[in-house]
Length: 505
Image (tube, rainbow, N blue to C red; front, side, top):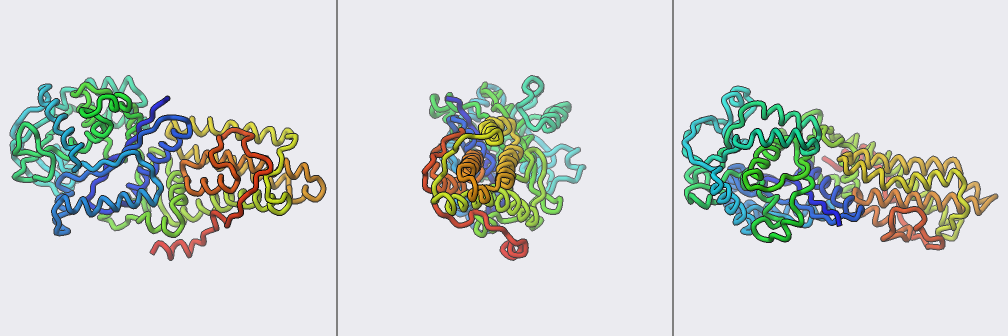
């Protein structure tokens, strides 16, 4: 059975989760669900990054110990994932023993391989980024809270693997996607690659995993965090499990952490002698008024506001429908309103209401027989049977937005078919023809619904239950004539923009 191992970044617990966290995690969940529909065995990993200076500072501001701070915030992420119907297979917190001991194992192995050395270093240190920065980075003015530091630290020989990484990027075109991000990293690698400082003296920052060969130091938070991708699937603890799942098929990340994943992480894996993940996909940011969502800017939209009012599936659908993977997307209440009303209320919801309403009114509330299909129905049947393959190809190419659009476009085909055939009129003169049209529309709706299930799992489960088609496959002809439809309220009642604005205040 094909395997699909997908990861999200593990999120800093320096504040409550926001729509940026929600987007990446929903995207991973959607990919996982699509692959399950395709028959793949799936492992979906997410979690929290609980070490480092940012976390310690956030805890100090709240008057808490770092671990107490993490223990308080972790449930907020888990509760949001539950509200969003995200079905992960494992959730790692980097303060767990199972992770810490593997980080120390990795540090020891990289040290034993001769890839870690100690040196005294003086340079500019960005507290916000939790790393030393170059003189050119310092003069760029792009880094906040910078100070001069001189201290002894441990360094990873990252530069040793520069050419190996360049060769790998050039020979594996799908390793970093989208392509312009790969080119960005190749451009970065045209300059000499510095070694990576991977320690922090406890005297300055003690909230981290202790380095096994020097107890006066903890490891750099990024060295710690990245190891989660192998610590959870069994590296150093369960060889059979690790062999089954590694390498990951895709690391989903935001574009702002591309360097740490495509350079730090890959060179660590080179040092360990491990395979690299198949793809690192860097998606864009959600913007408000062309500005990145940021807690410090005060423009972060709390996804819970929309979830509680309009349901998790509406939020999931909007986020998947509106962002082209690899590009930024602009969040507005107006665009949420238009997306919901156009796609879900007018197209999908209207089709369900029409089909179920006419079957209830004219056919005793039971799915009518298919009858003898005309050329028009045969064309719809052909499009319906082609839809799963089309969606699968788009998802595999990380064109999730296009996959969603493809399903909605097919729903629109069904609505146009209903308008043209007018089964409410046919019922007066040709009941068999009316039955054929309604069966065709209902069967097309069933297949479209299955293909939207990864995006809107709760609503689609309701649709399939209404149609008596729970557990059916996206292949034409599985809708059973004579099946009693269940009554239902409108699944997607239209949203008025003024009401939406009031609910988000």
